[in-house]
Amino acid sequence: MSTGSEPLAGFAVGVTAARRHEELAALLERRGARVVHAPAIRLVPLSDDAELLEATRACIEQPLDHVVVTTGIGFRAWLETADGWGLRDALIGRLAETDIVARGPKARGAIRSAGLQERWSPESEGCAEVIEHLLEKDLTGARVAVQLYGEQQPELTGSLRDAGAEVIEIPVYRWSRTDDPTPLRRLVGQAVAGTVDAIAFTSAPAVAATLAVAAEDALEEPLLEAMRTHVVAACVGPVTAQSLTERGVATVQPERARIGALVRALVSDLPERRARRIEVRGFALELRGHAVVLDGQLRPIAPAPMAILRALARRPGHVVSRAELCGVLPSRLVVGGTPWSRDARPQADEHAVEMAVARLRRGLGRAGIVETVVKRGYRLACDPRLSDQLRAGVGG
Image (cartoon, rainbow, N blue to C red; front, side, top):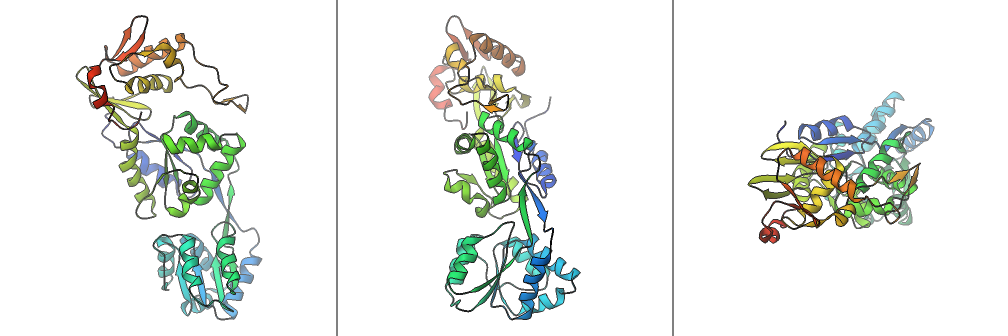
């Protein structure tokens, strides 16, 4: 039996990343998490480089006033592609005499590794602050190159054009939804059902693709509600988090937009938000996402028994009726490809509750923790007078 000493042991984390997902998964698993990999997007190289070549030549042939570098990977790809055309040196020379704006730390790193130096970078890593910075200048007739990051940026480029600038868009790469949405669709269902504890997002397009897949199954609002309540939405930075923040989802973000920092933020936040600690019959019982830690030993618990345990833990020592427990047992969200609404799904019967309680007792491996109160229901073997104090635990 493994211990629960790893900070994320007993928790399930969805990973939506396409790039570097192995690194993110390895960092999470090293800390004990069970990783559910469900890529939301894929990076699509431009099938025809003619547009990028034309934009690169436009940058080289005439002086630029400003260049906005939005991503490190995109800037490096631009220089590598220019090198293949024999234009890298000319492009570097032009950029060296230009006011370079870097949207975030990864963009800054790519700029400096090319031997260049940015003139300014926003603290927020957001496009809004970049726009505000540039609009403080007189842009009438100014030539501004904007390296795009996976999709058109009408808010940024449109604002610059409205201010009188000539904008050259640099289409280095674009994002597309993954070819097989099945893993992502499954992750959405697990989040709504409460069988994953967190979803990690490393790009804004991944958030958009996840919400789009949820919407196709009529689960967008249930997914958002899950992330507002019991599923932690972990975003690598404010740009990634923006669309969730606008929808009322409180996200977890690291101080620096790095994968390692994102994992550290989850380690700090997830156990505090989703763990619940109770003293039962002299044993220390800690509820985690899909497992419990009982006297230092991690014990995986299936979804139905865990739903029963969480319901009992909300009122330690008090009797919870079988009828009430019927309502907490999870039901399948999709039948025959058609989503059920929560109001329409069938409720479990009392026999299902009895079976789940039996499985819970076997999973806990210790007698007497879950007590049967004849003709009334079940309770955790705690002193009910301590319930108010015990309810101070997080999660549930």
